[in-house]
Amino acid sequence: MLHKKFSRLLVLVMALAMVAALVPTTTLALAQESKGLIVIITPAHDNPFFKAEADSAQAAAEALGYETLVLIHDDDPALQDQHFDLAIAQGAKAIIVDNAGADASIAAVQKAKDAGIPTFLIDREINATGIAAAQIISNNYQGAVLGAEEFVRLMGEEGKYVELTGKESDTNAHIRSQGYHDVLDQYPDLVMVAQQTANWSQTEAFEVMETIIQAHPDIKGVISGNDTMAMGAMAALQAAGMTDVIVVGFDGSQDVLDAIKEGKIHATVLQPVAQFGPLAVEMAHKYITTGELPAEEKISIDCILITPENVNDYFNFAPVK
Image 1 (cartoon, rainbow, N blue to C red):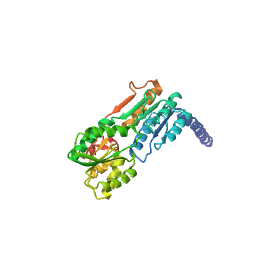
Image 2: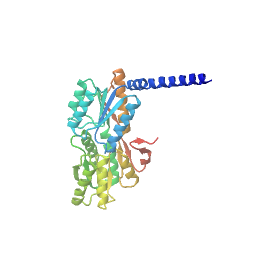
Image 3: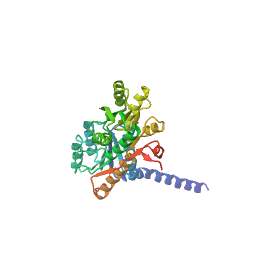
Image 4: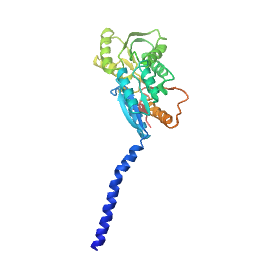
């Protein structure tokens, strides 16, 4: 009996030893199953728009079996160049980037291409074609027209207003402003008393609006190039007791959707950012596995007007399922 018990114990110990011996091999095999590295580079994540696009891209890449490296360039082309150098040195399979300047980013994208690494641009385009593998952007002009038309309606086609614009180096800032004015300038009783950049920044927008309010305490509306600046403008107006001023933004951030529900911001234009990252990852994966690129380099996705009537249909840049 004792001999049988010892035999069973010996078998169990041997089995456990075999399992233990296999663990490193199994772990190594899992590591070897990685399809490679995808590097994701965006502006700072204190802007929920950029955090959402980075998070969605990372989740999509990891779901397909890729390792990811998420980096922030803070809208600094020199820092972005360093990130591209790191991606090249790490042998990345692809780079997904919301770039740090339409002109300033061309050299970095070219350098990656020369190293055999495709770059998939999201949100912001560059002033060059034939270098990036794809440029996935919102239809910023279409979205700006939607926002401006709603702003005109809310303003009753008359009154003094302010425009807050984005970074001078960002093509989207110019496209949105052009879309706004192609609508607003048709109404002679709408008078723009100030047009000033706040560089996409909530803090800067607050400070800019404080100064504008002092010079123009009778403004009726503010139209903003993005939601972050709209939030800063709203805060300055609230602090000045000007709670009836109409504010319209652009992005569809959850902060602004919540402010629309509270009646503090009146409308925004939703960019389908939840699609950008996953779509770029899907294209990168297809290229990595088949060598095939999209038929068209530039892919434009239409925007959606968000108002109190449909605000509950969206959450965190995406439709509520």
